Amino acid sequence: MAAETSLQMKLRLLLIFLVFLAVNPVKAQDASFSQYYGNPLYLNPALAGIKVCPRLTLNYRNQWPQMGANFVTYSAAYDQFVDAISGGIGFLVMSENLADGVLTNTQASAIYSFRVNLTKTLTMNAGFQGTYIQNKLNWNKLIFEDQLLSAIDNNLPPTLESPPDRMNIGMIDFSAGLLFGYNERLYGGVAVNHLTQPDNSFYSNGSSNLEMKITAHAGALIDIRNGLKSGEIEDLSISPNIMYQQQGEFHQLNLGMYLNIYPFVVGTWFRHNFENPDAVIALIGFQHEKFKIGYSYDYTVSGLTNATGGAHEVSFAWQFDCGQKTIKQKAIKCPRF
Image (cartoon, rainbow, N blue to C red; front, side, top):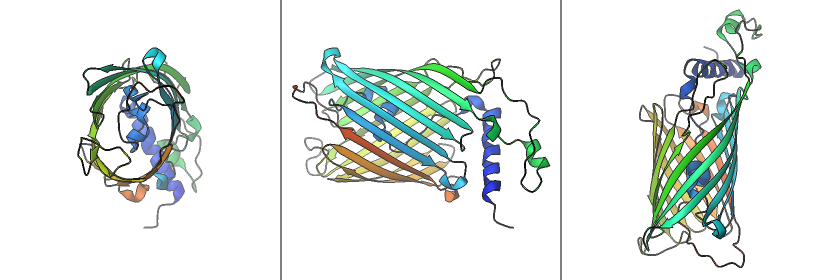
């Protein structure tokens, strides 16, 4: 059998994407980042301001690059702690390009979090997020069964399917989260996205609500020589982490560990979707007092196999100075990737 051409592969993926979108629209999943702590405001709004001083983060993810119609996600965020309001503020902008532009998703969020010192060693952050979401459908890039059946020499005729009455929809969304930090080196949190479950159907008489997403995450920073008693992220340390996410019938578990050998960080973890294993992820990063940059690769172990090209992800963060003011709050030492 001759090898599948890039056009055939693209047609097949677009058809699969269409079937998924048309038959099961309410179960579409949010974007996922392997370096989830490298995109902290997207993980949990309660993480806004935990580094105290101003911070800028940038993220890029390219999933299934070998399939022709890949999934590309960009995000940029800024956050800091503000003494005047006794809390952190954050701004997050994200853009997704799905299946070579069949569907694009753009989001802009504003976040506020506040910190409560429960004891001398235990703190709690509560975060609230408001988001504007815009989805655009490029109908001309969709391919239907009637086109494939009538195709001649890879030339596709127009489809007889009727387009939806809306190609561009906007919605307001709200999220909230909690973060607990113990002795600055043990941390855990929970976040709930899409609290109001807004309608994101392209049909004005349809109903396709964004399903609520629940995220739980926890971890520790352990100095190899002194355990949890001392040690900074710059020291020789390990950081085991776990994250669980649920959105509708979709369940996902991430288990992994970082090894910090300043100025380098290496990490590996396993992502499992309950129904089947998903990917093994490897990371290498470089960190400095002012910035960090990391690269990770997802090796697909599910039924899709790694012929999809897995996923490439890059994260960057710049930590600004607080200036001359006295720092009243201590940073919680979550991983940087």
